[in-house]
Amino acid sequence: MTEKLHQIRCVGCEGGIPAMTKDEIKKLLPQIQNWEVSSDSKMISKRFTFKGFYKTMSFVNAIAWIANQENHHPDLEVGYNYCVVKYTTHAVNGLTKNDFICAAKVDQLEATV
Image (cartoon, rainbow, N blue to C red):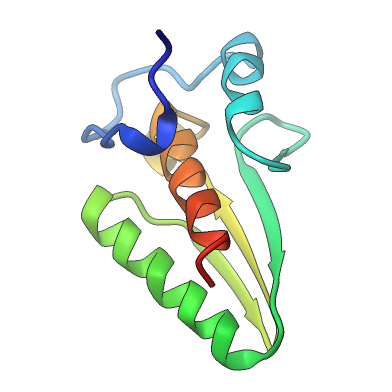
């Protein structure tokens, strides 16, 4: 049985491991909903839209909680009714499983806001 990404915890990453290959990325991508891989395969991102600023900020605060729990932090672009979430692992200059774990956890949030 395959582990569900949103149920896994991130592991510390200080570098020293390779970034994921395109094939590894393709295997995990179906487990996150509508995330896009950057053209250089170093980042995943997704735009979320909401009905107003309060719901947007509630979502952003929930992402902050996940980031703190997992010790893996996204880049966020926030506007009145949207939030773009971007994950990459700076220590390896590319993607790691941690990025996909956090993306899956963020997907779980979307239904609650």
